[in-house]
Amino acid sequence: MVNRLSAREAMYYFLDEAGSTVHVGTLIVVDPAAAEGGAALDYHSLVALTEARIQLAPRYRQVVKSVVLGLARPVWVDDPEFDINFHVRRAGLPGPGGVEQLQDLVGRVLSRPLDHKRPLWEMYLIEGLADGGMAVLTKTHRCMLGRGAPELSQILLDSDPGAGGETPEDLWMPKSTPGTVQLAVEAIAEGLARPGEFVENIVTGPVSGLRSLAQSSAAQVTEAISQVANAAPDSPLNRTTTSTRSFAVASVSASEATRIAEHHDCTRSDVELAIITGVLRRWLLSFTETLAAGDTVRVVLPLMGRDEEFDTSGIDGPDSGWSGEDGPGFVTDLPVGEANPAVVISQVAGFASRNAHSATRQSRRLGPLLPDLGVVPFGDVAARVFTSWNRHTYNLPIAVAPTPVGQRWCNGVPVRDLFLVPSLLANRALAITVLTYTDRIEFAFLGDRGVLADLPALVDYTHDAFDELRPGRGGDKK
Image (cartoon, rainbow, N blue to C red; front, side, top):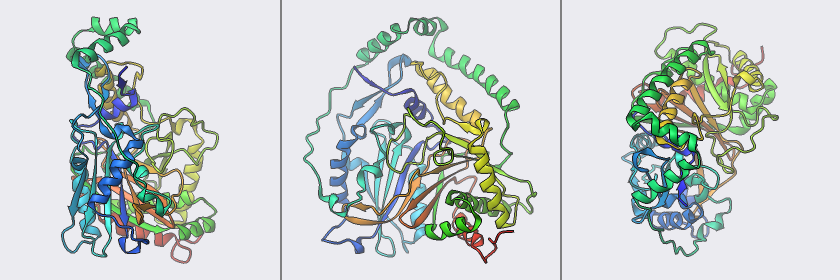
């Protein structure tokens, strides 16, 4: 029996097109000078560690194989020519090796699509940081993640500095790859198990005709929905995008953010949203002379932690770790038109609390239309239709790690910073992730280089927005 992509996995697989970045990952900054007991990290040790750990996630040695004529969703098969050295790569920063050079390199790596003829992941050991540090960048296609298939960083990093040396012997041998005829026969057999669907697919006609019909119908439905739905405000964040990416990161003190939350009688999540509101306000004012008092940016956020009554059971997603992607969510508005920091944080907290408990503002998550259909054209079209529909419902996705992450080590070397890399779908100019690591709140910004050419400025905006929320610096209650 073949291991077929689920409807959700197929959706993400087909979303990988020009203008989309359907890979996620983690930027891991390590401090070799702080390692103890002779622990070290270099290219060869990273390769050995990765090869040992991916035994825990077999999908990292598998490729996606399509079924002829799109008779069914693609399948996962072992890569008979798997080469760990193709996937784990080495890169050096140009001088002076500062944060700017690191961010630029990461942006360029994230701009390149993954090779669909190989397992859909890459990893880079980045050397040459000015302070003697090193970085590891993971890059994993979103279709690979689910229950029992964690993101690379989750299997590489340890909560115990002594666990890095555990490298059990790897005796992996690839299974034989099913042939084209076998895949077609199994797809037909599955179709016969659902005779109504199978006959409909045969009667409808060729794949190209089915796709054209589905696209035409879906476009009409999407247009009708967008006219009656509570659409998000017009924003440059929803411009037509390209495949080029820019990347930036910023950190603030988690303990200081907690003090701000206590001062304003809100949650630390509200403080994080207020910081992002300040960042967006500054960015909008960089090319707009004024903002109206009622101007907002609509964001989609994870629901976890906001509505304790929301049922998250049965979700086919990462079941552990720090991934902030793809959970049930809700939309809320950030008051970018408001200049007073104390008013901003009050409004942010009020909006988020109210909207998290509003059925009309909740969404289960991005998902395929007609998920039970096995034929590829439906999954292909549905993925794009859903993206088009979501374009009207919010301006900016924000992925938030569900729980704080304590100190981690990579091969015994302490991790200094941990930034989540979000995916960026078509017609989205910016995506943001938030992760609390040790005593730092780590923000990562992934933007379309054609729309946000000034993305590095968001780093300073983050620090400025954080500072103005502090009591005595503009963030006093009003």
